[in-house]
Amino acid sequence: MKSISVVSDNTEFDVVIIGAGINGAGLFRELALQGVRTLILDRNDICTGASCAPSRLIHGGIKYLETGEFKLVAQSTLERNLLLRNAPHVVRPLPTVLPIRTWFGGIVPSFRRFLNLGGKMTDRGALVLEAGLQIYDFLGRRARVMPRHCLFLNRRTRREWPHMAKDVVATAQYYDAAITQPERLGYECVQDGLETAPNCEALTYTAPVSLQNGHFVLRDVLTGETRTVKARVIVNAGGAWIDQINAVLGLPTKYIGGTKGSHLLLKHDDLIRELKGRMVYFGTPDGRICLAYPFFGNVLVGSTDLRIEDPDKAVCTDEEQDYMLRMLADLFPGFHIAKEQVVYRYSGVRPLPATNAADPGAISRDHITHEDNLAGTPLLSLVGGKWTTFRGLGEEVADRILTLLDYPRSTSTKELAIGGGRSFPSVEQHTAYLDRLAISCGIPRPRAADLLDRYGTLARKIAAFCQEEADAPLRTLPSYTRRELAFIARNELVRRLSDVLYRRTSIALSGRMTPDVVQDVARVVGEELGWSEQDIAREAQAAWKEGRERHNLRGEFPLSSESHEILKA
Ligand SMILES: Cc1cc2nc3c(=O)[nH]c(=O)nc-3n(C[C@H](O)[C@H](O)[C@H](O)COP(=O)(O)OP(=O)(O)OC[C@H]3O[C@@H](n4cnc5c(N)ncnc54)[C@H](O)[C@@H]3O)c2cc1C
Image 1 (cartoon, rainbow, N blue to C red):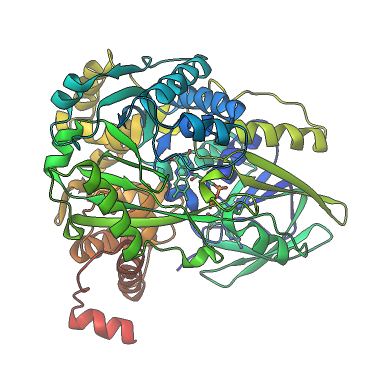
Image 2: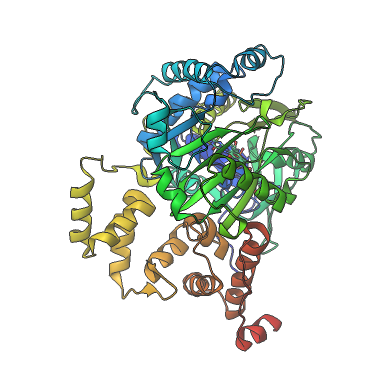
């Protein structure tokens, strides 16, 4: 398979960022926009670590009020409000409902947690929640775009939630937001940087092998090619792998104490109907918080929070699945909830700071930047943070780097739309925009709506590309067309089939990936990228294997005798 890299030996960059999760990708965009010559690299694709495994909430983190992290909540609610404006194609308001089982429960433990004396919150009563929501609304007032919270008493709660447990005496509703495709937004951050600053570079499937006097040896993990680049500042944005990367760079550290979190996608039409587009965010008897909300036609259920030593071993286990299904069934005893309804599952590791805290849920979700020095080259390690706050973190770290390099800041990203969020129509303009898109590109309106939903305003460019040559729906997944996937393969830093199935599109995440779909997409992507028959067969096999091992997809890959021969060759 060909390499897409264009970095020649000994190229000198101002900054090299290792790790293209959302923190690396966000910082890359931030620096590129300031004209700082930056290289970002990842040993996998963009957003393959924690950044493709979150609960997909763009939120202030109401639960952090219990640990007194007001500054974090204020920053997160502001970033949430900004993302609703800057990435409206993927970030949307999410009405969130808290079931309440008592009126006065949780007052003592909430004080203990607030004073840092520990204590599990097994019961958050109406009084505690009302106080929390008042503060949450107040902290989220900057750049507000969504309504304030309200409390519903028993009768309204029963009407709204006929299948909810009978001991729920009231519900509180407030607004946060959810991101449909975090993996795409991460890619779009990198793409924005590349488009603004042609002297910046992005290398996927590339890892550092060694570092000496600011000279990096990098290795392309697909082709085995190596090359050398030089950096004035190094950023380690390796998430849960930060300490491993520092070890490769010759600096032993113990910055990370990650916890694993898993999610399920449940096919459950009755529950979808009950949820009516809202999320339930509910406490569990063991003091954790679980959530469930509609996601691409299924219900996203999460999550767990378990200590893990080796982030490469993070997969959702059957025990975690049973736990999440049990918690959901406790809240909705009126529904049959069973493991056969799980169509997809995923797991990731939160890159939290190393601590001795007994309760992983009590570890701060705020970020810390460690600054070290490697023989005169500054090395910044970005620990923690939330998906929601990536822009703020990027801005803060970029300011530090600009000081180190003695560069001025030229642009603020605060009001700057990302990727397909540029010129995105408001709710009022939506219908007229779709009509114009359909007419100008000669496509049916539902197809225009699909493209706008998937790619934001990039839809126009993709629709035009689809019109340039004969196009056809994919045989096994007709809502996607061959030219649409070819556009992605050609233009979106794609090197492997799984990049398309798992990250540039929502094919896998929406639970629609079957062996036949994998083979169909493999052929289109392979033809576009000039893969051999053997590459196509291997990539299809690898993508399905990933689905079976990491996402619990069921079914064998039906290999034709022809494919068997190709793979043996
Ligand atoms: C279960 C779970 C639920 C979450 N829910 C939410 C939520 O709802 N809302 C929210 O705001 N946040 C949430 N988060 C937190 C958020 O997802 C993370 O804080 C964020 O994604 C961390 O991004 P990162 O870029 O630091 O790390 P990662 O996304 O892990 O990126 C690190 C990158 O480094 C790369 N890498 C590793 N080793 C090497 C190497 N040797 N060479 C080159 N590259 C390397 C990896 O491939 C990876 O792409 C959740 C996290 C988890 C795990």
